[in-house]
Image (spheres, rainbow, N blue to C red):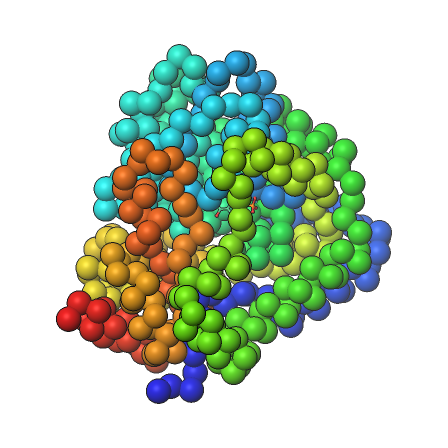
Length: 414
Ligand SMILES: Cc1ncc(COP(=O)(O)O)c(C=O)c1O
């Protein structure tokens, strides 16, 4: 067995990133707000829109944008059933009614045809998520929205820098919301960005941000230290020699134990969910200058990082058993922002347990089916899992992981 083990996800927060944050934090108040503005300008330029505003989180942005639309009684938002549960929580908390649409058969993003069929007089907005960096069919979404006079919200939490049909994620809709949470492809250990071409939306968010309390420097430093520890434990050699033995031990009990422990939990009761969501939003703080300094650094290498990840994903596309994959290699990965590579298997748990014996850690995905009447989405929730994909993986690593997955899959079958 290989000495080197492969993490489900390698947190991208190097010592250099850490020093960038400390350096910016040490700068005190000097030119602090300028840093955030510079990051916003560069981000808007990357996406190809006139305006961007740094926000505390993607969910914060979705919630406040829906409030800004001034929802009337029973107004609806159409959104995917298979998504991160904070997204429907934001919709409900805003006072809008979520109308869920199942995923496209054979894929994970929303079925755009069905989505258009759900448009009714009470519909105010369509919200799409570009899951795992893969774009939705935005031409069709926009066509349907224009016909109905609806707003289009892009949830770009997984798609920072993604390009589809020659346009970046976040430039298609009326607004785009990005997440810079830990584990994202542009991570500043929290925060996010709103992008728009609409001056009124920009102005609204600018005022909202100005009214938020500042994030104290000690809080930023604490978050950076935590992020650095997580990075050490999910990269080499920390993962192979500390984290993996623990993961392995816990998996003897239950292969999903760590997933449950690490994934954000949402209350099943809707009233509790809204209270918790609003509590979280009310505690939000302004995006800080040290985070912006880190964001600028990461933005300058974003395309390079995304290209490197896409090349690795293409290798997986070509070499992994087609039965585990979502699509053929013919589709290509150019332009996708891939922090995650997902596979599907009806024997997910068995396969994941078997992969641990090869030194490969995987993760049951954080996305959930948020509406019981969506069978494809339900199946995705139980079948989908993430495999290692990081910019530090060498060709030999990729070859080993691919071979092991194919072998474990054959064994699970046979
Ligand atoms: C698809 C998707 N949308 C929205 C969010 C929420 O992002 P944030 O944590 O920045 O609110 C996430 C978080 O991981 C996500 O995965």
